Each structure stands twice: as C-alpha cells, then as structure tokens.
Length: 141
Image 1: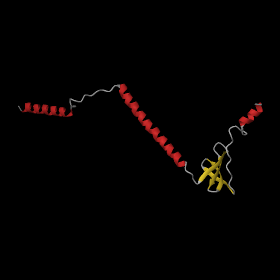
Image 2: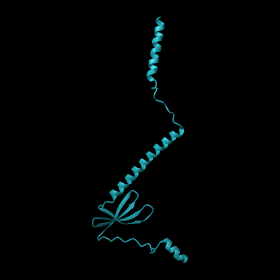
Image 3: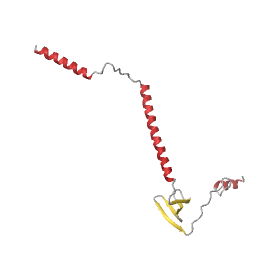
Image 4: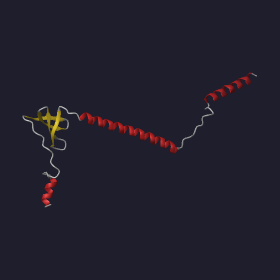
C-alpha cells in the first residue's frame, strides 16, 4: 500500500509541476512565417539606419553652425604648392601671417607689415591663364 500511495503522490506531484509550467489555455501561439520575420527584421534595420543617418546629419549641422561664427583667425587666401603642401594667408585681428602647411607641420613664413586686401574671385566669363586656355590658343580655337 505504501508503494501505491508513493506512486500516486509522485504522479500528483508530477502533474502539479507539469501544470505549473504549462501555458494557459487562452494563449495561442501563432508561428511566424519566414516572410513576416524577414519583414520585421527589414523594418528594424531601416529604423536603425535611419537613426544613424539622422544623427550624422544632426552632427554635421551642428559643426556647420559652430564654424559659422566669426572667429579671431580667418583664412584670407590659400595656394596649393604641391599635393599636400599649401601656403595660407591668415588674418588675426589686423595682423596678416603667411604660413606654410604640410602634413604634420605648420610653419610661419612671414608676418606682413601692412595687410593685403583679398582679391575678388575671377568672373566666370573671363579666362584665366590655365592649361585649358593655353591648349585652346595653341590649337587655334
């Protein structure tokens, strides 16, 4: 008799445990198809990429706003001397400095006694002395 009660209590105990971990009868699990899952992943990816592009646009916009302020140092003119070298005319207050810029190095070349007025850009209709204009002249066009 003792073995019958032990097996009955074990069965009752097992049934109780099985009932605790069983899902309620009102919830029905609908399996998602591959297409629906793919659509959810694609939508999530689009949202994440959109958030990244929005943050990048916002950061670029903030950088442009901060650089738009009038600073103490302004670039008056710039000339390329090589693939990575430039000569830059800077204005600090009323003083103008000519500096040489190379990768990893900036050197002061000259401090101008009297400031130079910046040259206006050439009009689009006028041809400057360039390779294109020299080639046209040599071809007679």
